[in-house]
Length: 104
Image (tube, rainbow, N blue to C red; front, side):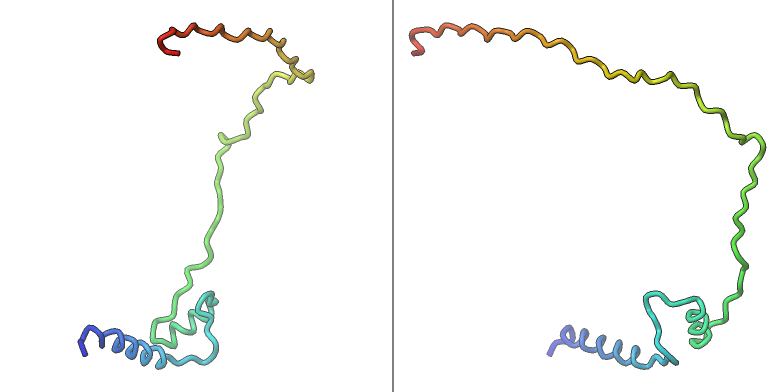
């Protein structure tokens, strides 16, 4: 057997051994863990606990120069519907062009 054929089997075995060695005290939602679960798992895995940096501040200081401006003046809309343009007289079809006798 070739070494190239054994590599996928070896990688699969190593991954299976590594994943089965993880210990957990309860179910872990891998998709959407809560912040408390992440903090608990960080400490369980030997990482330092995170320090809280407080809540974000969302204050907006607007100066008086940003006072609301007056709405622009707009001309009133005419409530009557526009009239349809007058129908143009139909044009006659073009006259046929004579064909040379040699082309018939």
